[in-house]
Image (cartoon, rainbow, N blue to C red; front, side):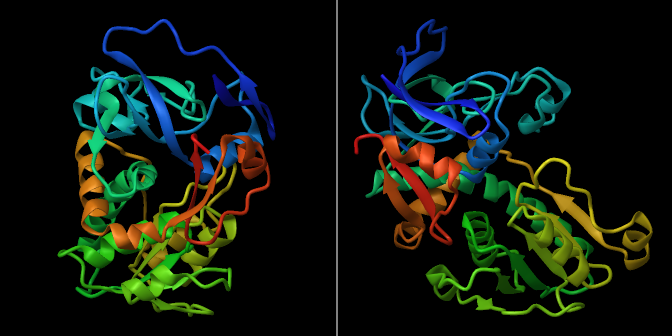
Length: 325
């Protein structure tokens, strides 16, 4: 079968590899249909791994003996450690991640636990590539909403930094939450049009002003975005780090300044569970027309090496590998 194999830093090639074998109890061999190209894949490609790996974790697949499509939760937790017992499965002490430390979906077939596959029915099955990132955003929005209880206002001015897919999904969930009544603004360094902003009724700001936002959600993962968030947030405000920062980046603010300005910093790391996957499917099912605009370029597997090494997705969309192309 064909697969895209990462074999060094910025080194990806299409190879003929063996169909996965050694299937264990509870596992199946799935036929991969679509895979979203996540920034995590790009960061792993830049850094390289200690051994060769097939990346890809935003997977839509089918099973030979079953009807319909399935979305993959790529996190495999042990269910036994202290974090699993507290339902914090993304922090499992024995966590395995398909597409990160085990082979993932940039291949025609992959070996997966059957219980990690979530059935869905959408008019366009390629939308299933948004289910895993939406699942992570469901958890992120939940953490943000819980933190807003610390704010002194009931309608917080909220700034989203970064108009990529993470920014879209967090904005969408806050905008549609019955427990959130804040004003949402978007700041993105690109000047490219982002149609989803108008669809959600969000105001885009060219130059955000300091001391205005009670809540800032940093969705770009960039050092500049993080520095901007901490510089702009109001005293006694909240900064959520949602975009994945690169390793080695330090907070550009001292503990003394955090203390004196009384800034609350929260983060949200992954968190796909049966519950959040189900919620993600329900959100996309209810509003397929909105999510359709978030699908960017559809590319064949053969173009994936260039996509991962020359990172330039269409703003506010997810590039998707179509395995049948």
